[in-house]
Image (cartoon, rainbow, N blue to C red; front, side, top):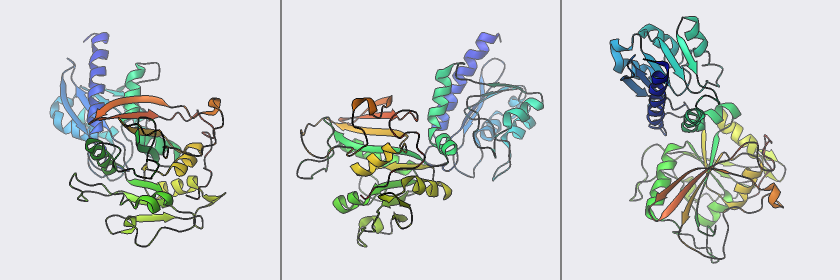
Length: 373
């Protein structure tokens, strides 16, 4: 195969590996999602796999099993650098060597020092390794980074990846002037939110939301049945006002009430310290669902990585807004977002934004202003 054809086959294989990696969302935490495709010298796929669950075989091992003897002399295309350590499974670098793989294409280097080094181990053994760089088909690197954004950000920042989710009207309201908010978004949008809740490992709200709405913060079926693995529920409650009868304290899932006594900060709970503790406990993906002042504190502190908005075709003209009380005073200080995806969900539109770490006031901070919500 000539070099141009080989590059084209590897690019196609990487896009397929990204799609495979996405299948592990919600089942692999606290591990990364990874996809692997093995192609022969003619560019034909002979094996593929993805990391399905924490503690289970890694993507490379699954793909090698599917390829069997055809892996010898083939090329393995992986979304994340093959691991080079022994944990609950063996090192993927050695599995690739044992199978006789001749070439490995890596989209993203592993930022976790314990597992890194697979590239060097493979090259030392004579394998031809191609590591994609930011100037080498950047759209492919971006796709591989994006599918694994939760684990990559958590590993690099040493805190969980934070997704802020909100359902709102077309004019940015989350409740009417009388406080009513059920239901702004459509049934398909709410179903999609419960899918997301099932994928994360932590839910985060302020005590104001608990007192106003008494949410259960669980992943549920369309009929309302609590089902599947449930995320940890965390309430930011500086003064311990969460009622013992609140639904968030029921037995459907584990709950942590974070107070200023445990995480002392100026004005309330130190949100950066709280996230650091959650990371220490093995939590990697936090879904932030409000309220508006907690969200403002998280955004101002540079602690939100992604914004997911479900926009309903409604206009209110008054009522609570999705974020209240940030440190922004002028347009030049605005927290700027990068639009990633736009999808229609029922009658609503789902917008996913990336929060660039270098943009917005306070974004470089490692802790957050406290909140008394």
